[in-house]
Image 1 (tube, rainbow, N blue to C red):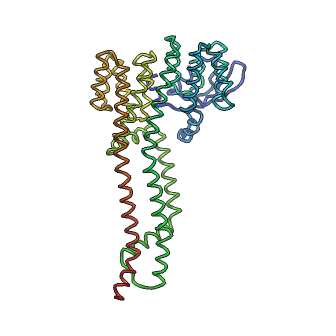
Image 2: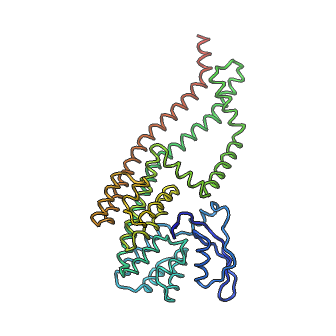
Length: 409
C-alpha cells in the first residue's frame, strides 16, 4: 500500500459472517476499497464500509488498545528465551500464557494461539490484531518466518525497542524540569494577580489616595482577570477543542506538522527526532530481510509528521524508479548533509544497514546535545522572566507606599 500509515483512517464495517450473523467492526485502513476487498477475501459479505466521523475523538481509545512498548518488550524477551531453548511456537505461546495474568495482552495472545493452532503462521495471527500489535512488528515477524531465522528477528526487534524507549526517556527527562518550572511559575503569578493584588487594591481604595498609573493599570488588569477568568477558561477549552478537531483533518495535521519544523531551534529538534527514529526503524526492517522498497513504505509512518511523511513518500517513488536512497533523501531535504554522506558511503560499500544504525546514533547524540543546550538555556530564561514579572507586580503595588513615604518625608 503506497500510502501506508500516511492517511490511515477508521471505518465502521457492517459484515455478514458465514454462519449468517451480522457483525459490526471498527477497522483501520488507508482506502475503503482495499479494506472491502480484504474483508471479502476473509470470507465476509460486506454490507457497508463507512468512514467514522470526528476521527480525533477516537485517537486516545485506539492508543489504549495498542500494546505498549514495555509489554511488547517483555513479551519478545520471553519469546526469545523460549525459542532459543528449542521450544516450538505453540509451546512458547502456552508457556507465556501461563506466566501472564488475565488482561488485554493475555486475551490477545489466547486468540493468537488459537489461530496458530488452526494452522496460521504467527505473523498472520498477529496481523488479525493490527490495532494492538504495530505493523512494523508484524512485518518483522513475517520476515523472520520467511528467512527461517525468527530468533535473529526477535533479537533485533528487542534491541530496537530498547533504543527507541531510551531516546524517548531522554527527551522526556530533558523537558521535565523546565515544564515543572513553567507550571509553578504560572501558579505563583496567578496567585499574586488573583489574591495578593486585590488585597492591596482594597487597602488603597479604603485609604482613598490617588494611585500611580502603573498601580492603576495592574489593578485594572487583575480586576479584568477576576471578572472574566471563567470566560477565559471556556475560551481556552474551546480553542483547544477546535485545534484538536482541525489537526484531526489531513490538511490541518499537514499544516501543523510543517509549521513545527519552521520553529527556530525547536524545529531542528523535531526534525532530528523524527529522522533518528526513521533511520533506526529502517535499519531494523532491512536487517529482517525485507526488500528496500517495502521497508521504506513500512517506515514512512515512524516519522510521525505528515509533512515529512509526504516528502518521504516522494523519495520512495524515486527509489522505486531506480534512484539511489541517498539521492532521494537529499532531494527532499529532511536529513543533515553529514548523514546523507554517511548514507551514500553505506550504499556504495553495501553496508547500508550498519550505516543507518550509525546515522541514527549520530542524530540521537546531536539531539541529546541540542536538548541539553535548550534546557540549560530555558531554565535561567524562565527564572529571569518570572523574576521580572513578579518584580513588576511588587513594584507596582508598593509605589503608593513609596509615594506616601516620600510625601511624609
